[in-house]
Image (cartoon, helix red, strand yellow):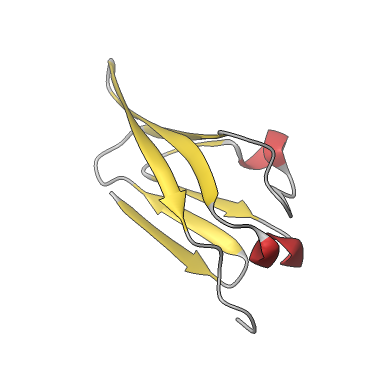
Length: 86
């Protein structure tokens, strides 16, 4: 599994997954901007967009559910917010 920031977008990748779903653990400063549209995706990757206020968050925390066939594995996401100016 890979987690990285692309500007204000959190990219979550789980190779081999047929579906991925992101659930914030707490109200997050600055987003997600479109939680209903970006909370889940078919395939092995998900992009969750935040607004600039996410840079003021202490951490970005959530759970990533990775679905492969009939199996689901959940991972805790606990990331620093994106750096300023990116």
